[in-house]
Length: 110
Length: 112
Image 1 (tube, one colour):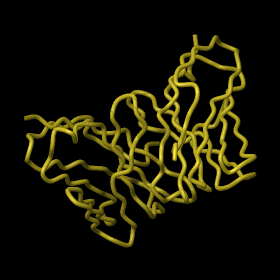
Image 2: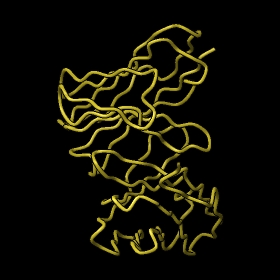
Image 3: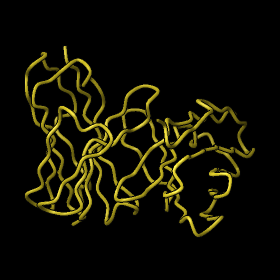
């Protein structure tokens, strides 16, 4: 039972355009959501997070939106840069446990 | 600060062998956790600890043991390795479970 789903395994975006990565969840008890970025042969690195009491959080080029009624969150990257090419994982937290999605591979092309 | 360190980086085991994956952090984080990453499965939580002396099971704990005798160290033990445990293992630490987790570089384990 996949509680956190990233339905798009891959996404290709041109440099300078917006990248939108989506994530859906089923457990209404999740109270914190996070996005991580992963390069090959490295551990994931934290990007941005949002509490369940908010609907938007922004940090530079990265914005996370949370729609609790739809159990959906998205990560917007504007403008996209070639260095953003990586696998992006969304994760959801409740009861001392973090549950990850399966990841979306983002490729930013020139 | 070294952050989160993991050893070894690579390991090949035969079925039935046991081994310990080491994880250490120097950030005085209370929360530590172990994940495995398999193709198409994302990262799955194996075990976690909210502080020294306290551990609990995650999503996929079978075949693994952990202990937390100090704040800094959180070793993961494979009791009797099986081919299904072939994976990349990541250790992470944070101030609390919902805080930003800092990940180690990973251990790539192959069980033949």
